Length: 161
Image 1 (tube, rainbow, N blue to C red):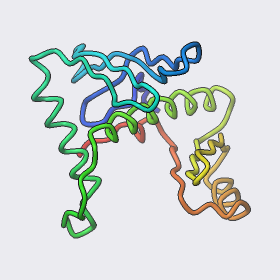
Image 2: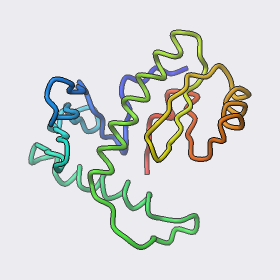
Image 3: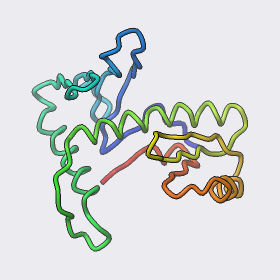
Image 4: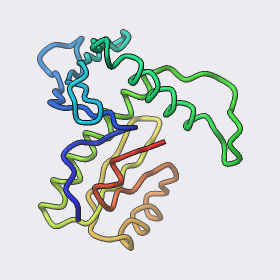
């Protein structure tokens, strides 16, 4: 199993992700990297827009990577785009989630689990460390899970589109 240090969407990674619990308005902060190079930083504030500080030489690359990801999210199976426009904050929220889930996956593997099951509900997210695919199916059936993802290997935390 290949070791992956950071989750990635279209070559964009978060390094030094910090969850802020001492300031009620600041949720997350971290460094943004593109293709292995430091490109800037971000701060996610409660009830406010994501604050980005991107180096000028990476602005176009970052915008292209974000646009490509958002376009892939809005396309259906036939490649047609659905109505509505997504905010670039979706990109960063998804990247933050992937980074958090990667760390949970790694912790679970160290404890002997084989995969990570993430269930999305109206109330939030439930995360399970699971031993096997069979156990995923049992948990999904027993808990009537309908909107979930399963991560079996580190490569599942890398998205390219």
